[in-house]
Amino acid sequence: MSKLIFAFMQAYGEDERGSLLLARSLRKFGGKLAYHPLWLMMPEKLEQVSVSVFRALEELGVQVHRFEVPEEALQFPFGGKVYAAAAAEELASGQADVLAWMDSDTVFAGEPSEFVLKENISLGYRPVMLKNISSLYDEPLNAFWSFMFERCGTPTDRIFPMITTVDGVRIRPQFNAGIMSVRPEKKLLRTWRDRFEQLYKQAELEPFYQEHVLYRIFVHQTILSATLLGMLDRNEMHDLGQHINFPMFLGAAPELAREAVTLRYDEFKFFAQPGWEQKVVLDGSFQGWLQAQVGG
Image (cartoon, rainbow, N blue to C red; front, side, top):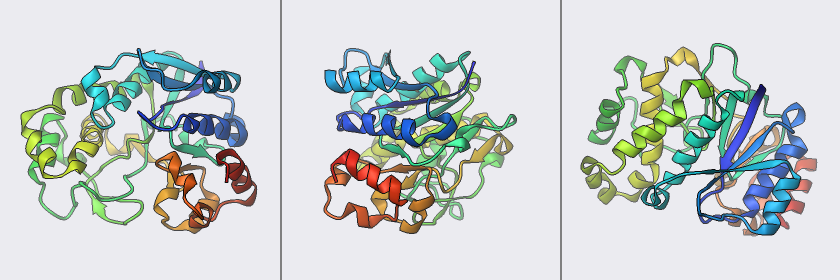
């Protein structure tokens, strides 16, 4: 059994070069984990990469796995990712102790040993970057979060304070859906998919979708958070640490980028911005490699 499998889905409609960058960075900088299995999850009947990129991924040892997803969910913000994560988890069951799930805008700059979970840990997570629609820990629950916690069976005694990684706000737990390390046998991601399927179209959520687009954009993440809190005690969770999931595109604490193990750029057009290199302080060898990869 492989100890760790990495998996991702290319963002719907996003530049295919992102998938290549993720794969190349893991193989180049991943250390002892560099050549662990890497899966690209791709929806059935949807070609997300060109023939040339597909061949390049094959040469890097990336396996492409197809999964089924309802068309309406694929068209909903990040809906496809929920189904992709669940499919990867199901496929990894019996094949790996741990599945590292990530968004396709992830770049590896070092060995991601943080993803290898200790025996008593079922979830490795990072908090969300910004407050957005998070629930402030020191304020009463609003109707949106009350709905989520109630429908996902979240015990109130499992709700603990969490600090957003960029704006430093104290919130009730909201886990970043763009990077996670899970034990496949726990079925955390499959339960997330099931809850998402049950909830995202509920009439009770429509007023929030109408109030602000952020509710539509992040509803998948709130369902994930409420689901995980309902399934795991806090002592079964572990924060992967500030070196994981560093947001290049937000320009926060740029000096920390030098020590980052994984970084995020949000959209590939980030690298087309003049002077993007000055927004973060990267290790010299890694920065040179990254600039060469993205044409900087």
